[in-house]
Length: 140
Image (cartoon, rainbow, N blue to C red; front, side):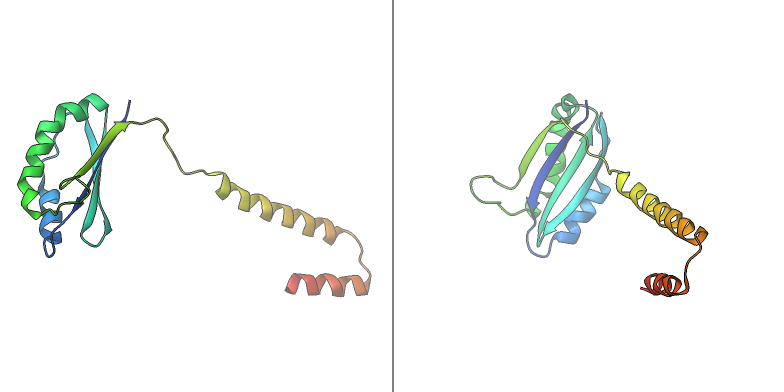
């Protein structure tokens, strides 16, 4: 079952680019690692989100991830409230969310209904005043 880990960091002033570059070059060749993203969440604050094949893969990779953390530990500020320099969480997926396509399909149906109504109106013989009113409605 898919699992994720999320780690929150605050970088010391002026160290952002160095922090990003170290993550860009990092060896993420951990067993079960699918992909990840480093997300800037505010001034000097970041979250690393990792996607894994299973929670056990995260557990097995912890020593390697701590080794990675050691390479940039000096760039990080304490998060406060007794957290230290990282705020890590991880767990198994309980719900996978995907974009819904239903909203995209609703628009073409509305267009078809308008065309159908226009075609129906076009077939009926219309008095001159009714034609003028219909033309005004179409211009709006």
